[in-house]
Length: 219
Image (cartoon, rainbow, N blue to C red; front, top):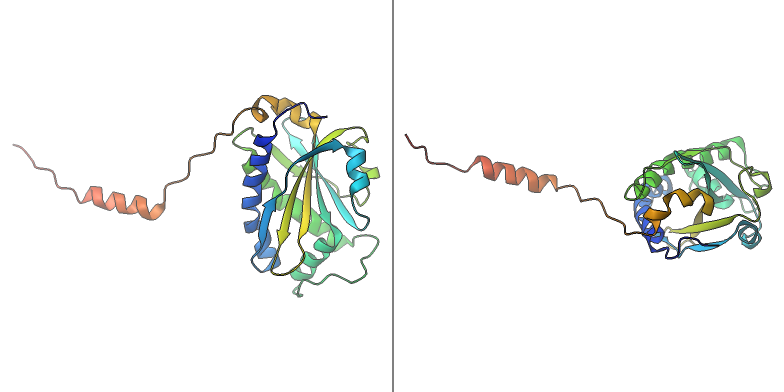
């Protein structure tokens, strides 16, 4: 199922992405959160679907460009409704009995999450490849997803989000192996992290120090 061999590179990208998610979800949750990346898993899409718990789930396609392919982001329905309640000024409570379908407002929230996450995903991938992600139409059943076959091999990256003493929720990003094949040389190499930007205070101090240096003038 896995033609890439060592997946440490993709795991590293997932760790980069996880670190960026605090800036996404803490403002939405209105509190501090712990966010981490789980170990990667490669399996058939049918097996992944079978292992998913029953219940309301948002399956959001994310078109990948310029290489052809579509990834998936999965949001637990309870988590979506909690964020929606927060958005409308509530305390972040979801109904005790979840509905069978998402409301138009909840669907809009899922689309908003996809748009927000597209930027951090692009940035996490940047050390390896210039990839853009664009959210598509959310579905509540994987059977309605046009770009995924039961026998497709997929890479599952999972991210845990825990705020306070609440039970953690998990967001899955699913990459079809076929969509990653164009990037196989990069995935099997080493990640070259981007150089950190200089600290502004340090740079300003250095500038002041240099401007204050006096040079002798020779006639």
